[in-house]
Image (cartoon, rainbow, N blue to C red; front, side):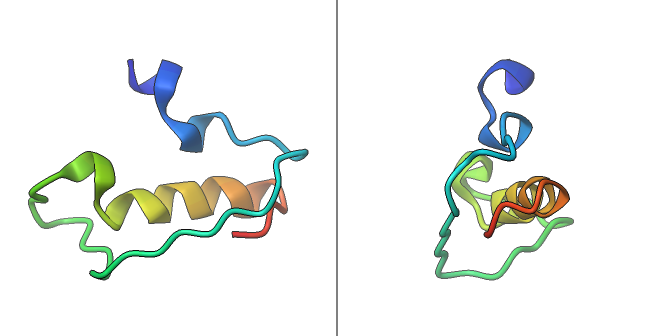
Length: 56
């Protein structure tokens, strides 16, 4: 299901710029209360966007 629905796996070069805002900083090795909406998600989306030159 992750591959089917996760936005960071569906970024394309024609996507508009992305803006993400979180109250906490990413903590990739720490357990998250709500992993789907944690700041950790932003690191994966940014990596995908950077790889396609989509501003994030």
